[in-house]
Image (cartoon, rainbow, N blue to C red; front, side, top):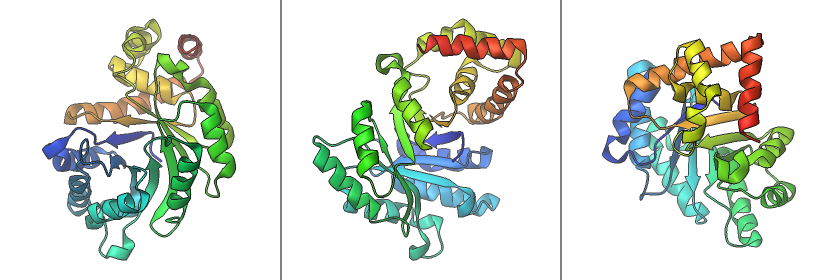
Length: 266
């Protein structure tokens, strides 16, 4: 799973070209959904196919995940059709991670949907996960009952949920990747913080890239990045690597920056 995953929500008619551009720039992960209101998953599939033809990118080099509703079987069937252009034959189409959009109104409904998702593993789906789960007991109960354990928890990372400290700890303990979305939009205070500004200056990147790097430094984390700018796509990919390298240097300034950022999340 790549550190940065290209997010395709709200891209509308530009989805195909933006996905193609993101992959040609260097993204190797794509997040989409079988939800016509906010996503054009059909254009995601075509954009991936365009990049594969143009640059020789192979399907096995990519990580494609899709979010689905409680109508699991219908959603999976729709997603497989939308992604048909990513393989030569229909039986070769698969989803790297199938993500339940959110827990359902009751625990039993959530478990039922999860069991339906499990039935697609491993033929059409490699792994499964859940999004918008902000209460640790719900995640713990799902993990305990699941035959196929979640590999992804995809949540909005922000102050109102305490930056998901307990959930991130659970994920880290169980080997689940925590996926952060709305990382920039929901965190203007973090973007303005001295820790972020200082790293941006030291590494020579924009503050949003510095924030991405700091969130990734929390460990076992990936981030949805939905930029529509080709320039920012490249800057994000290159900049995040530079920030992570700087933070791993373990010099006095890097240690101070990591500690300062951690204190902001308390």
